Image (cartoon, rainbow, N blue to C red; front, side, top):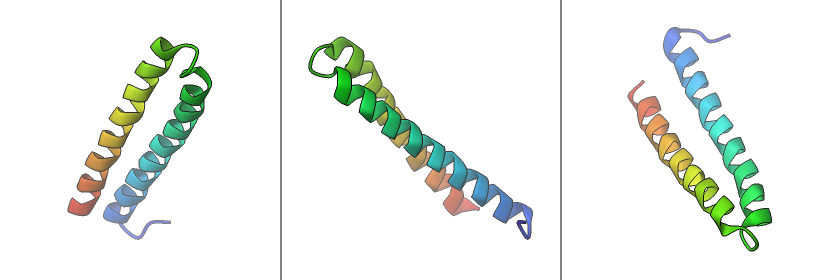
Length: 66
């Protein structure tokens, strides 16, 4: 149990970052599978991995402010 709202918020941000990392892992597998034969399918997925990285960085900045 979190001791206060701040600790609860930090845990939620950590969970969100973990979910983004999981998503990136799944997308990397997808990219590895399709990159050679279908780059038109892999390219948007790679863009999504990059966006997820930006989101994680923003969440980390938010967490630092808590």
